Length: 497
Image (cartoon, rainbow, N blue to C red; front, side):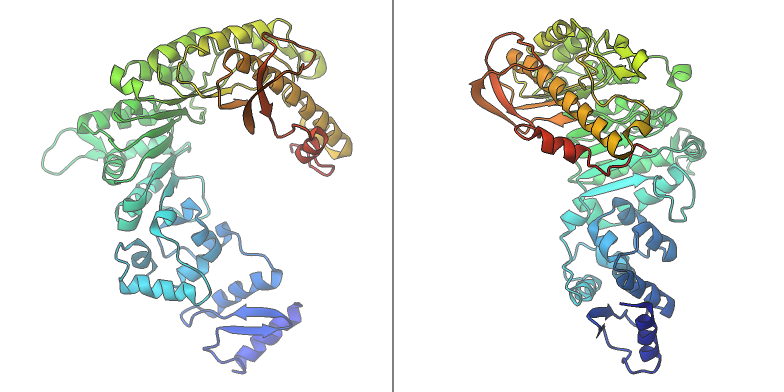
């Protein structure tokens, strides 16, 4: 469709040749959907232009042009209902009531369903729309009232005032990373009431605890916040005496390990992403290890309930860490380990611009770790550090990004991927010789597609470690190495920059 045709449609509309109530108009094979009557002409134009360009407006652009009339936490969740039908939702007369009501017979809800179905859009069930929500300051496209926790306060209030969201929330991600967030968090500390209560409670702590307590189906919480937040979150949760009985899954960034004390029915515990908050000058130690220590401090009954644990120290991963994990959580069924084994810090070959080199003798080191891990009687899934973290060799070395540019760079990338596959297979072979009963295995970011109980043998990198028979493993590259490397590094794949 050419741009003059678009002007013709505008002319037809202005001459009333296309009636105002017309919802569709087809010209040269293109169907234009006219907006509801309550949209301004400018909004109509911006609705039509994406059809002409044959691409939708990005959500961040929509949020800037037309601030949402529905709760902003829905935009932050990036649900397809919002990303694909933003303008249709925003044009509804009372979209907040229509979305948030639990009454399926509510007239606003019925009106929204008709509004969407007229365009062939099915309104998804509430448990789909609100099951996963996010409170974050990483989406700056909307004019928010303040950085960091000020925006978080507004999002928490929105969820608390949306019955459908509160009732169907199953997974909540809190991700606040802002230089201003620590200051705004401090500024929100006020007297808990005007009745003379002397204990000061951070408003955000109270509302956050209320949200975690009132959401009846909330089972997973991901908490990634600035380090200073522990100073009021931990204190205020203790003062309020809260316990989050329903939470089964925690994913915690550094300085949030205290949360394990407030989740007595915890089953899955993960290390989250790390923010640089200069912990060495304020909190000396290793935040990765603190998470393990927090678990060790729990009563035995709580520790025994944990079946999945991911551990990623900031320093080296030691056999002492693994032994502590086993002693603290003897019923683990899935264990994920990050970082590098002791000694791998010397694996860098600086003569080759930082290329990771194979370290003779690291096989025995890895075997010593695996021998300790094998003492977990219920372990079925094991995720090991990357091959270079194990000291076994190359794993997409952190060289200058320009080396991967162009056809020659892609060829080098394919060579690296093939070498990585070999080191992954080597690490997997050691693991399965020690624990042939595993049903799931990963090395770094490479996950085995299947582990076959059929016993087989094949040499890897010329190595013949341990017993000759191990479970047969199928990887993404098994039987198709060349095709897989081209999937990893197409001819026209750009470099890192």
